[in-house]
Length: 112
Image (cartoon, rainbow, N blue to C red; front, side, top):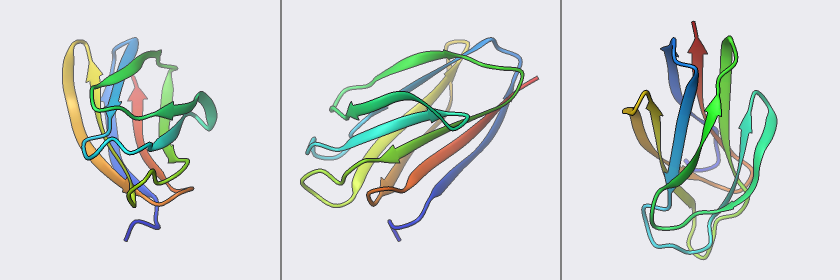
């Protein structure tokens, strides 16, 4: 069940930016991930910690695809992560992923 990509949906906004925050919601065990925006690496090697950290990203017109790729599985299988999508100071979505190495958790934001 962990050896598959996970899709978390698509969202629409007129906002200029999106804030993406993430953490390890389980035991902090050395989970690493890579973040892509429209298939380009924007964060190469993130070590997930117990508290939220993240980045603000300027959206392009149209489709903005974000992928979290599991680079490893830490000490305990699988790679676990929790993320929130924040637009205009409001959390519009929050979820968790459970991924084997090499698989991605994806969501799409359409800027109108």
